[in-house]
Length: 424
Image (cartoon, rainbow, N blue to C red; front, side, top):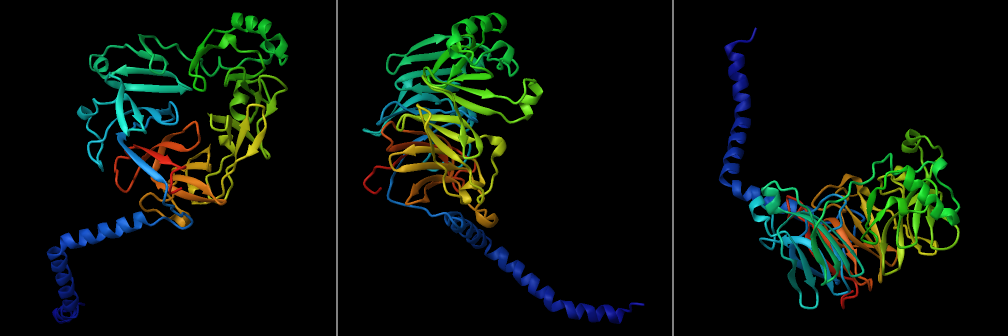
């Protein structure tokens, strides 16, 4: 049975500890601002220190446009017109370091703009208030499809197309054609032949038996009709003029097509089809870059393993079908989504890997823009990249990137990295 004497003894024993707790509480209250500042500094130091295996490099010119590019998933909203001028969809940043999402009422400045690097001036290329838009540029041919904010506020369903050679585009109201469904995108082997010479005959037969869907080719910035495609067997997708990619399936059954792997084939303007392979892995065509006049190949997503210790294979394929291995070295940058491109200074890579080696998490982690220098990837800029494009001469990179340590809302700032600058 616990007596009052026992309680008194326990109280005397705990009293020193209680006194310490009270003093700590008083100290924290008195120096609360200092403690918060200390924690902030520690966090910033951690954010500025790259994770193990990531080496930041300085000396290359990085220029901030002062504008922000939206981040719609999978859409390219910036393109080089030539080596000095960049066309993009964006709005002006309200401050040098904007740390909050721009309120809706302040997003009225979203427009199609031109950044001239010679004068470092950004001008409005199409003076209309954009709600949503998609951009495509091939050479100097521009296609800008969008809806206006005014129409959306009035619930008017109009959509616009601004299209033509740069500086001579014409604006029109258009109804975008409905894209082909997944089922109609495939042509059965009964309706197709691998004899390219019979293409005109087969095209007529396919056009008769299949709905004539209209699609958009982001490599040429032109629309095409599915009935105009040659009957090359399986799924057919156009690339640059006269070139196609097809997919061969192990079975004709549509359900099996969705589950079983298939091989992609590149059909050059002349010659036999070429299987898209990277070592022993099936590959697909990603983007085309004019600097090397080549397509970027990447492993089919079913084969990709997100790990810094597993190679994620890439390749470059010229328009004759010659494939060059273009696989970057392994490292913490492979802990997220990656994209590559050829430049005059070598392989360029973007990574969204917020995690670093050993579970490192702080600031931007291993995310950022990298350049292969002496067989080692060096980080040019830290942050979460989205859209990017390479200038025709291979020197400049236009990049939309968000600095997580600064931008809580992952705002993508438009920047230019000059790989041929004096410091580089």
